[in-house]
Length: 304
Image 1 (cartoon, rainbow, N blue to C red):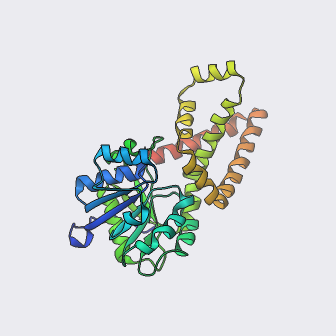
Image 2 (cartoon, rainbow, N blue to C red):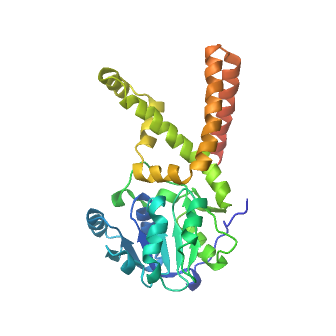
Image 3 (tube, rainbow, N blue to C red):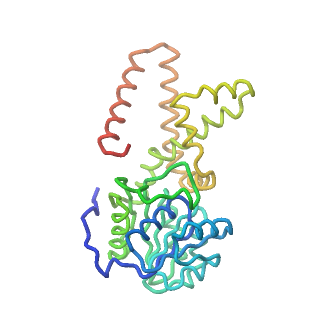
């Protein structure tokens, strides 16, 4: 896997005159804080269709200009960062495409890539560059007030450009994420979607399912489960508290990879069920030992 992880020198080539954040949730509001503290752009613009979000952005004093008109928000911008659910990204690009200046760069922060590249390529104006990106960082919180500058430090960001993507545009987006403290990797879009299906999407699906099971329990048992929940269940509830609209779109737009990995997960779960039924302690211990090794690998990669 090739990396773009060299320290790049700050010069005029990498300085944005004007950046526009489309959507201002956890990721974009955190990245906007990076732009502000490191002076990565002369002008920081924010767009949201929600009035309450615009008021929060104003109170936080992160953006220089705040818009409720998406076409106005992208005018003369060198860089547009899509931080909205993946299901609406291409339609928004189509909506503001005519207002983009030539040589503008669009990037995104979504966790699915292949379908997004296909849909945006259909509406991308000539002379405008799209650099698909996925910063693998986050919390269960959302909204402008949930952002913080250190969110990205030490984490991975995966870029999935196509063979036609401008190399200069890739360098600029890579530099931006490095300034946020991320390690940057280049990956094929379809392969990215399969990897993230197992490392992110399936865990979220399992968490939603387990916590959803609790909502169906009778009231007394549900109360006791909540009252006496241990660390493992609490971790599931944290994941299941993630933005429901965002995750709805992730599953719908990465359905092939998710269903493939979900099938393998169900097969492994069925095997585990049989080991418990037949009291096969040796098989259980072997599996649990393997999973401990995976945990050690994650810690060694400093992704904890």
